[in-house]
Image 1: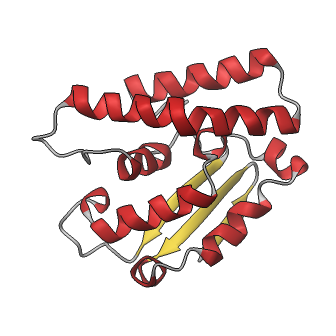
Image 2: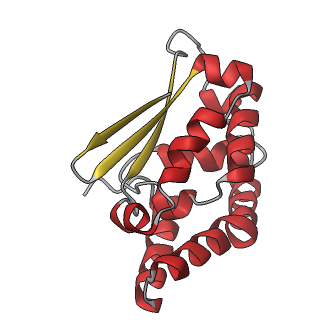
Length: 161
């Protein structure tokens, strides 16, 4: 498990060994440290997630059952992806693609996939984000702006700005 801190940015790395063992404890330890008020405030939308060790694999990571299961196991304990993950990288889309069925393959209907994303967001992702926002003292307008950025991210993709 690697965690790299850069000014205003934090990358959480997940190794193939962690995924294959199903042991989320190391990653959860790092993610849990982000929940302290000062860290949560500082790293809002400044975290990325990276999976390492699958470079030689021809399939997309989101197609691998063990990767999807690992992310689901993480989400069971840490549902704050919408709050922490940057909208300038593909990390949030990766997590959402792992959590939502069907995983995104050419044969999958975009409507079905979008409905699955919407269901996850309304039932889990946004309630968790809003609860954390309230805990750290975000204003209503900050919460709405964050929700708008998530919507734009899902509709338009990564925001490179």
